Length: 112
Image (cartoon, rainbow, N blue to C red; front, side, top):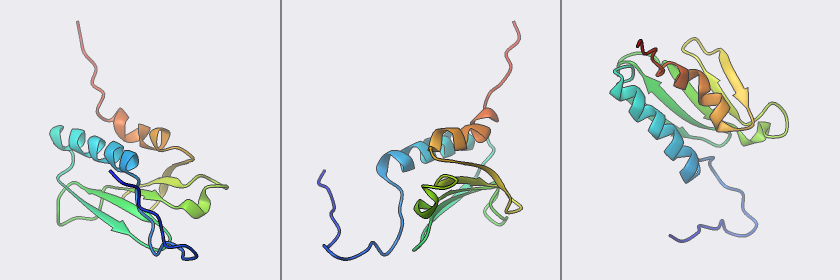
């Protein structure tokens, strides 16, 4: 696949996910759907942030929101995991540790 380059001298009009980032998020979404925890999702690309929302049911508020804000890259980290009530649950510079609280929900204890 080719590389898309912005027109010289212009700023990008929206923030988006890179292929590897979106692949990791959608993989987690698929595992949560298979576990019966999530049913629907939405993606928003804006001027300041890109967001992935995961819903338990389509008619509810999102259970979690995974947000990418490149403007915070040098400070707290550009990735944030935001809960149902709008509180930031986890923030970081890398996507993996930010998704860890959600992935822990998929772990099951196996008895011998």
